[in-house]
Every structure is written in C-alpha cells, then in structure tokens.
Length: 508
Image (cartoon, rainbow, N blue to C red; front, side, top):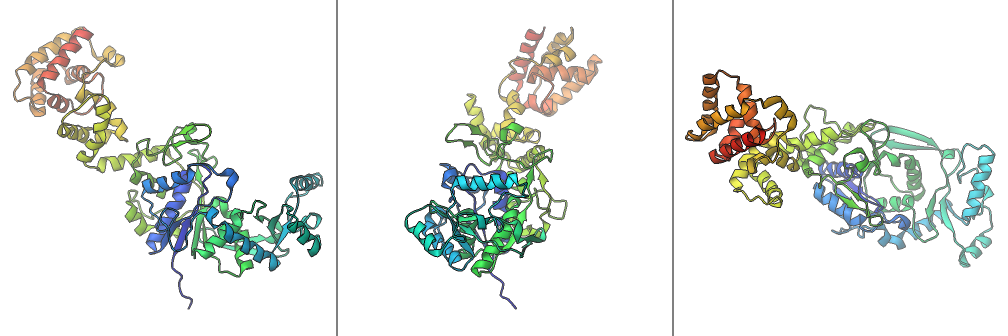
C-alpha cells in the first residue's frame, strides 16, 4: 500500500496587479483544503514575468490575504524550510532543470528572431493551417538545435546569440490529466505547442518554474483556476520528462459576471457597481483608484463566507459559516464544474447577516468615528442603544447614519412627497394640541408616549395614521425609521417639543 503523502498546497499569484476576488477564492480553497486535511498551506510569489511586474502588487496580495484571515504557513514574509518563496530569488535554480531537459532530449534551443516567428505565423495563415503555433509540425522549418548541428548550436550559444529553450512535445501520444473536479481529461500531443520554458533574459517561464517549485516544495495538490486547465497537459508531460510524480490537480470553476455572460474580470470592477478586489487599489502608473470590499464596508468574515459558496456547495441549506466551520466542512468533491454567477445583492445579504450578529457595543465602536467626523460626540451607551434599534435595517456600518441621523440631530428639511401627502391644512393645529399633551407627560418613556398618543387619537376621533405620520415627519424629516415612540423616548421630551414646534413653524 502506497504511503499517503502529507497534504501541501500553495497559492501562487503573479504580482502583475491587484488580487482579484477569483484569486482570493483560489487561496481560500487551498487554505480550507489544507486545514481540513491537517496539511500545510504556502504562499509563493511567481514574479518571473518582469515586464508585467507591478510595484506594490506583492505587498497588496499579502495585505489582502491577512485581512481575509487566510493565514499561510510558509511564504515570502514568513519564511519556511523551502525558502525563498519568490521565484525571482530562485532564478539560479531553474537553468539547471532546463538544461536537464535539453540533455535528456525533451527540450531544445531555439534561436528564432521575433521577425522569423511572425513570418512563420503569416505563412501558416496564408496556407489556411488550423493553427499557427511552434509545434511538432513546424519546428523542423525553424531556426533551432533540432535543425542545425551540435557544433553550430554551441557556436551560437558561445557567441552570445539570444536563444530560448522550448519543450519538445512528441507526436502520437495521448496525455491524460486526472482532475479531482473534472475527472479524466485526454489530450492528443499534436495539439500542444512547443512552449518556451526558459527565456532569453535568463528567466524561466511560468510553466518551468511552476513545475520545478511545486516538486521541490513537495506540493501534493495543485488547486487553481480553470484558466490553467489548457496548460495542465504540458505540466503533466513535464513531470513525466523529469521522472517525477505529479501532484493531484483540481481546476476550479470560473467566477462569472452577475448576468452569467463571461468571466468576472479585473476590468469589470466599479464599472458594474461593486468591487472585484478585496482592498482598495491605486494603480501606481495611472493613479486610477479601484474600490475594495474592506473600504466598501464589508466584514472580512462576510466576504470570505460569500466567496466560499461561489463554487462550493456544503450539501445542506446552511449558508452562514465561520472560517473554522468552513475548514471543517470543505471538500473538493463538492466543488462544481460550471461557473458561478457573482451576485452583488447576495454579497450585501451576507454582510447584513454578520452585522446583525455583532454586539451593539462592537457596532457602536465602529460607528463612533463616523459621528465624530460629523462633529457629534454622544454618550457611547446612547450610541449602543441606537445601533441596537437600527442594525436590522442596515447592510453596512456606513448605512447607520442614514438610518439614525434623527437620533442625533433634528431634521434639516422635510421630504416633499411626504409633506404633500401627510401635512394638511389642520395638521399644524393637531400637532400643537399633541405637543401640549406631551409637555405634561411624565415619565417620558416610549411606553407612556405610545399610551398617551392612543388616548389623544381616541379623544379627538381621528385616525392613528393621521397623527403618527405627521409626528414622524416632524421628528425624523420623512416617512422612515423605527418605532416612533421609541425614537421620541430616546431623544427626550425637550427635543421632541422643539422638533414639533419647528415643524409647525416651517410647514405651516
């Protein structure tokens, strides 16, 4: 019986810009898989593409994962027994493996210039060829070590002529990728091109560095996005060329736009009215700012809970999971094959659920700075009562002011539509009469206010709605807010009387 390898998984982003929520989900699934299987989760920065490197992107990735609570066991800032965890710092390592492939006959040197490559593509296009790639059919016509003598090849290398190293894909083979989510995928080798493994600038491409590092770091499972599925046959073939055991592969379904029409991309961002990045990102070149979930008021727990269910199904009706609960439940066999539509309203729903479960004390701590910015410094105990009343009506802390401003300041104006509908010629006199009754009321509590308004309505033979709608208008400025007696009791008798008098004065 084969001994079970320890579970070791990695999240390996490229620092070419901000981390998309699809990338966060990939990191999350790797993290959850590691936790469920008592394994190790590591972060590796794949920065071999120096032309696309974006300053600040690596730091952004690390900050994002930490905000989400996705803690890695090994990484560029934490170290580990397989350090370094930046591919640019492992540069010297890859050349020997590229040379190993050449010496074993599984790769070759190619000296083709960009112009020669373009000429080849144009020729194939003119010939109506199905593909215009550098492969088993075309390499015999190109400028490489397969078409020239060993002596000529050595001369060119020694004279410093630029070259790349390409994989030599054989003809007539079937490459099988066993995917834990999609099952067995078979690809005929003739369909693959001879990908560049080592570039003329002395850096490996993703394909080589990825395979070498996964092997050396003892990665047991490669869990990554569906966009890498076309590369999987090449990677399986590379493992075979090296004589290494390949890890198990799992390719995650795409995150789709809300209408299901295509992949949710980085460019969709604020264009669709919601963030696609965990944290706010400022482009270092253009200065363009893209919104983030953190800055938009989302709790990291809600954000992670929402992401976990975009592609994974727990098999029950449960929707609210802590990170610890997710780690206990997660399994790859419940990850779907088809793409998952992102629903921005459902994302808000998750945040609402987490907000309402938080204590009034914690929410008040978050709300106090908002009030301070408006020059309001109330008693924290009063703020706790307020958030306890209005939190069911809010999705975000930022909604609190709109839902509760009337607890702290008198309305500055009145909703015109409500005035038109609710304030009649005799309403001012009616409010004045109610005011005279409320002046005498002791104690001025919600219960007593409600009881006295009922008596007032009965004594004057008028509808409850007539009184309450007008009173709500002068106290809060519109037709919104929680229980009116509760509002009145909390702001106090003096403030209620002042607001009634101001309303009568302004509205006539």
